[in-house]
Length: 231
Image (cartoon, rainbow, N blue to C red; front, side, top):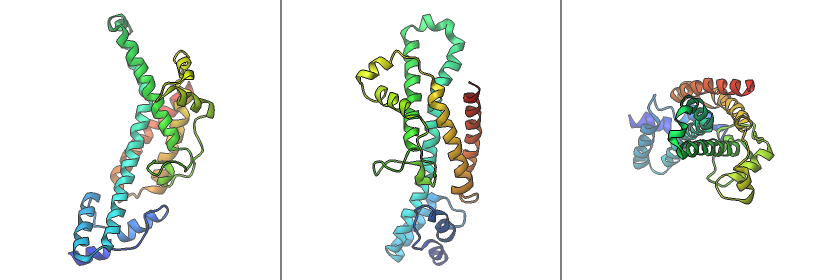
């Protein structure tokens, strides 16, 4: 058992894009095993056959990391819609606003901050290749369109209003925020990113589970984009 597995796992391929697909098909075909089990098998082989296996253990961990990055991206997109959802559901309870008192406004501001902060994070995710070594960018997953989706003026507002207190931020507290101006370009770019994942990055057989999640998520994004277009 270990001999054939060793032949499938050992290799010198790189995990960098676009070599990711090639070595996945050639070096990490572990008979339908999950990524977690593949990591364990690589560790066993490292014990019996020495350091060469450790590189492939790192490659397998990179595949698991790719999946986690995609899930993290989808969570941020969902949170970017918090403000819209707050308005949708709170409108049914406007008659209770007096009873809620200040708490009603507190939840409203929290929803606003949640949406704007996710927009800021996703805008950074889709902008440029520069950043700190531990930043996660869309081009890490092979995405090519890394132009800033949100306008520069709106990004300046986000930077002054969120995460730290500023003099301009004190004034921005009292303006009307048109959330579609921020979320619509993010949803459009996110839809483009999901299409890239389906067509160019993920493998139908090896990534079947995450592909199903991306496909379902993409349908929700399409509805969000249409909603913003109508507005």
